[in-house]
Structures are given as C-alpha cells and as structure tokens.
Length: 111
Image (cartoon, rainbow, N blue to C red):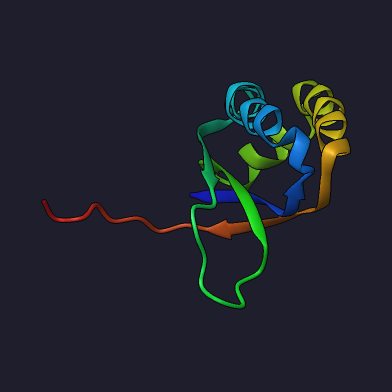
C-alpha cells in the first residue's frame, strides 16, 4: 500500500479562510477521491499543534494499492484538471504544498 500526502504549509488569508476550508472539504477532497487508482482520500485539518511544530494547515492523504496505481493517477487527465483548479484555490493561500509518498502498514486498533 502506498500513501501520497500533500502538506499545505502556511495559511489562507484571513478573509478567505471559511471559503478556502469549504473548498478543500467540498471540492478538492472529492476531486482527489475520483482520481484513477485511489482507494481512499482523506483530509486532515489541523486542530492544534505542539509548540515549534511546522505550520501545517492541512494534509491530504490518498491511498493506492501500489506504485503503478499512483503513477496512473499522477499521469491522468483528471489530475491535470484538478491541478488547474487547485492552483486557483492556492492563490489565497500564503504558503506552499509539499508531497511525500510513503509505504504504509496498517493494523486495526483493538476495540
């Protein structure tokens, strides 16, 4: 299993925060979930952080079965369209986006 995370480092401009957050949740997350090969898309919005933690506003995580599935999503027409939409959204975000691909191992918590 491979997980691609996009880290939004910084913050939206104060006057656009509510619209920015809505767009992340209602539009961008849906676009991510529709990329070919994505088995799960998740948005993590920062609630609080330790002192001196990096200023991570939000994290998008997409899960893929393997590298081939990730490569298919990255090369897709859907991603090209999504990136154009995301670029417009980022016009009101003071910061940057970084991506990290990670091999994932999961275990369910005991209930």
